[in-house]
Image (cartoon, rainbow, N blue to C red; front, side):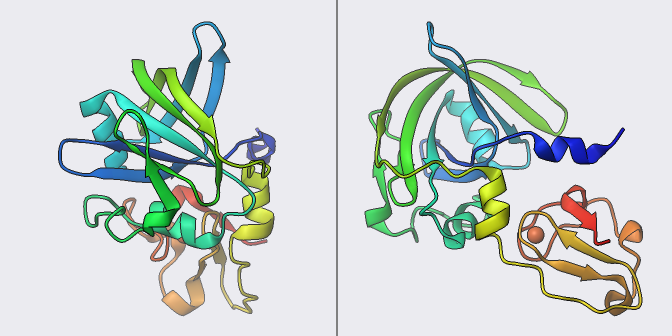
Length: 212
Ligand code: FE
């Protein structure tokens, strides 16, 4: 199979937020879609390693904020490149850039054009990820800016990988553009441990591609 075919699927980008009794948290996901209008049912898929996934399992509620084309890389770094287990992402987030929805969970107002409040109806364990089916119970439009697609992120927001002249193979992080140069590192990318993560965005080896 040509795995590059998968790159031509279209995706949006979203800040997924939830909370427990102590603190809210959020992460970036690219999988949210509507399935039915009556009932208004959507799904999201989120990595089990994300602290937000645990919060959704506990609370059964979440919000999704739709990232628009005005968002810059800092939004992705803030919510996507570190874990809520280590930091309180809303404690050091600009107070003017989010608001609290009717369910008590934050949604993002800067760089996002809409948000939805959702209640989990069912979930499926997909191995690395959990797929949540959810009912939409509230939401609003924030701006008329166009929603950001994953393709737009790659073309316009993600830092461009620096030009590398190397004797060995060079691997590039699909998420943040970080370059792993085997000649410089002295370790073949394939020999890195399975739980190795990108030093910049903390995504795993699966998100790297060999530069041709
Ligand atoms: Fe990365």
